Image 1 (cartoon, rainbow, N blue to C red):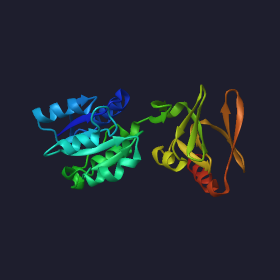
Image 2: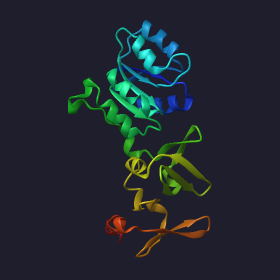
Image 3: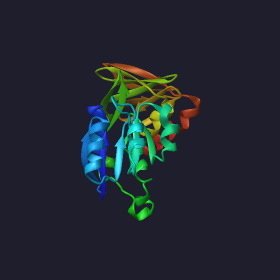
Image 4: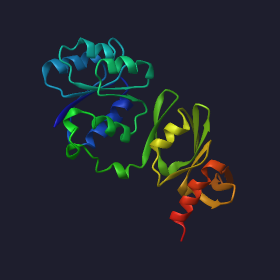
Length: 239
């Protein structure tokens, strides 16, 4: 078992990481700290094999915590700030994860730990394939969205607008990075600027797909570079 400690000043981020850790049998969660000073106390009292540590925290940040340790355990930085990545890897971080962190990316980082270099020992999540939600960062918080509630995504440069029946959410990320996190069986990219929920499609035309949005038909264009995606979906799903 790999004794794991979470260090992050955001309670929701801690909750997400705890959920991920509990899905991997080889990881044993020893504790959760909301600042680096409390983490330092635990590290001085018992053996920790893996730190999941945020970078930006009050009093002492994650990088300062690692530098203060004479024999630091393996550590993975979890942060919303990409500008510290170079310094993080110079400290020999196992990985550098940018929030919001999806489980697939988290699992990939865990598999980089030396204990898992043997393919037979690599952790797998029994519940990963059943995961039916995603976390997105918006307005300085992480929002949990069930896949079934999402109608479609619209890309606007470096932002993505997520539409549900109840609301719309704006998140700072690219369509490409978002597409990589979504399950192929639930979502399809039909245009450079649009990803739609396959289960919300009510009709497909030559140049667009129809979704039922708030009692009305919403036409989403099919881009010429994405028509093959739609055709493959039709061939897989048609009776």
